[in-house]
Image (cartoon, rainbow, N blue to C red; front, side):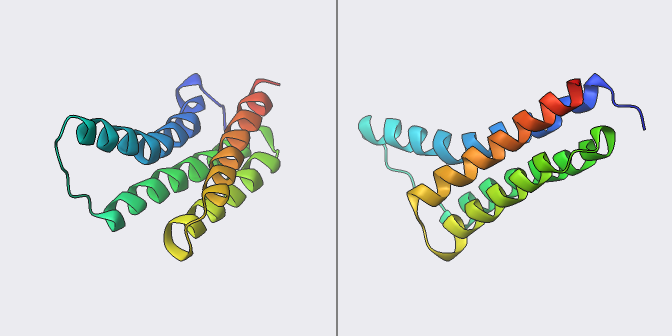
Length: 117
């Protein structure tokens, strides 16, 4: 299955959307709060969006794994997704959340490097 440049950006985009869903929403809420605007946010939907985009990133890593044959990016992505899911649904922990996003980003970077080689 030939790898095209059209597929190389799926995992990084999904990881970036997951990060933006998490920290971008926090920044928007903080900015609106500073401006005196209150906003009600459904935390279950918020957490669901974060985990959904992280899962999309892992799925994109799995599809690209068929191209370069390296499983490390997928394993890093799965570990990151597990930590993010734990932080969102089981018990919130900032180190777990940051570690999950770090592993997810490392997985996408390793996938990018593996696809170029």
